[in-house]
Image 1 (tube, rainbow, N blue to C red):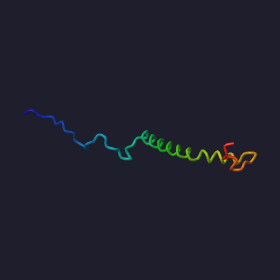
Image 2: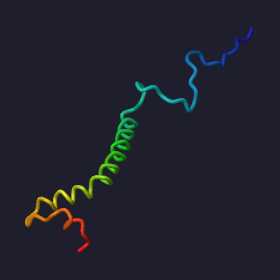
Image 3: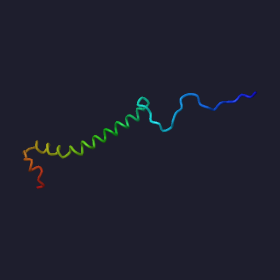
Amino acid sequence: MASRVSLKSKGKATIKGSKASPEEKSAAQCLKEWSTWTMKKAKVITHYGFIPLVIIIGMNSEPKPHLYQLLSPV
């Protein structure tokens, strides 16, 4: 009798497109997620912190201006 070769896979079945568990993430993927998160936070901090920083630096300069002098357009 001729023997037949089985083409069925034995072992765990893998599903394409399934998300990997946190233990299976590569270092490059973790770095990419971390850098994206960091850039988003830096954008928000820069957006809301730039004008107050300019005012604080202006208040500590010589001659000492008043707040209304810093905020006036002239």
